[in-house]
Amino acid sequence: MTLIDAGDGAGAGTATKPLGFSRRSFLMGLSAFGALGLAGCAATGGMSVAEAERVYGPLPNERFPVPAVNLNKVDPKYLRRRVRYDSKEAVGTIIVDPRHYYVYRIEGDGYATRYGANVGRAGFLWSGEAYIGRKAEWPIWTPPKEMIARQPEAAPYANGMKPGLDNPLGARTLYLYQNGAYTLYTIYSTIMPETIGKGISSGCVGLLTQDMVDLYEKTPVDTKVIVLKA
Image (cartoon, rainbow, N blue to C red):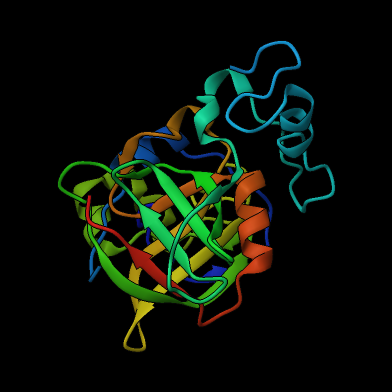
């Protein structure tokens, strides 16, 4: 998400409800710092209704069970799809295309897996190269002090928000690094399908949780990430 400062990484605890403001308010106002038709049974956006319902169904075995995606809130073009994508980058490289709201994982032989995404809103877009410095399942989220100064409602979480469905980082997070330093940008998971295909964050990139779980499992630490210019 954009950067939500994912601060402390994974940690134990139970989900907590935001105090006085919603998860949407987090997503719409996170501060970032640092570098960087489904219809009948016909295939739409490369996926049939039955397949989409399977791929984006509930994840009951997660630490915090994840609900199914409301597919009525997602443009079918943003559903996961294997597409032609010519690239000289190594297999596994992640390429973020904020202009078109897509994240690609290079698969080789001229193909990539494409995921729909939300990206940084105007004024918070960034581009460049980075790498996955660390990754976490159900991480703790700690807002940076600069964010708390701008959004005092985040102050209750100065020492970290426990993992859970209300945590802005969601179920999985990939942390972007440059030259050994955390950039404060992440690729994170969201259970808010209405945000896909929109610029809502402060520079981070969000995927539907079901897509993020897929990408996370395929992405080791040190994976190269390229963020294209918007």
